[in-house]
Image 1 (cartoon, helix red, strand yellow):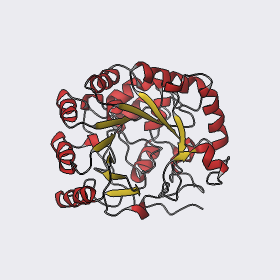
Image 2 (cartoon, one colour):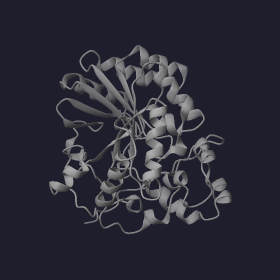
Image 3 (cartoon, one colour):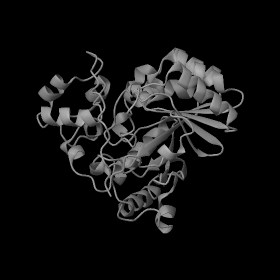
Image 4 (spheres, one colour):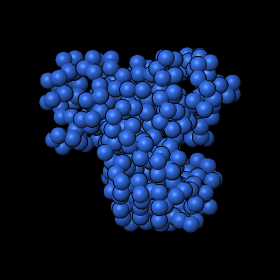
Length: 337
């Protein structure tokens, strides 16, 4: 059953030079309309870093633009979409914390991103400020320290959308009670200049810190991105990748194999391939479980064990990630969803 769309986001303004503006996008992409841009951005912001756009091709079916440029498909009725597709809202001990497991806690450090991916599972998670107040952040960190969790996962939004001093304060504040911190970020892929020497040095000094990046297509792994990933790995920071299986982007075994093999060359472990969460508005990106399982089986026959990500789904009941095959066998996920 579909759910009512939430109150729209405010439309975020671009900063000249660093982010693709609407006027330029309309002038360079003949298939894009102002009506689609405006309507979609009122529901979920449009923000496309110039570096990302420069890696793309101008066709409507380009794998990079499809992830970033709004589409009329976002505005269609979505009978299967959910506002909270992974069941986080009932598992928040604090507005900026999520806890699904006894040994882990997730901190939503910001709602801001360098690029707003059109398939995002949190695309409907808004209604308040983009960042916690100083008091809210201090409350959340105190809860994390007292939680007994061994891992704190920094998420968002993108945790690397905050300043280094805020990020380092968070890491320092939870130690030694929470020994391991994970940073789930797309910034090394979407905004590789964010991976500065100062950031890398600060993370290295606060080890153990694990960095989980998010690349979906091999064409995302070029130029400055390769340099950014290399700086992280060379500093001794473990770097893993999470991909999302997306129709029209990477639902092809050749693309998935090239992505995994390229990640391994860059010393980044292909950790997860996510079954697309059914967020309200992202129906055009969904690949059903039957096809996803067939693609993953074909991938397993193509790449080595170290290059094979685990194919997982995050069910809407909030129970946490499980293998897609297990979810289908247990009746949690339909083969046609």
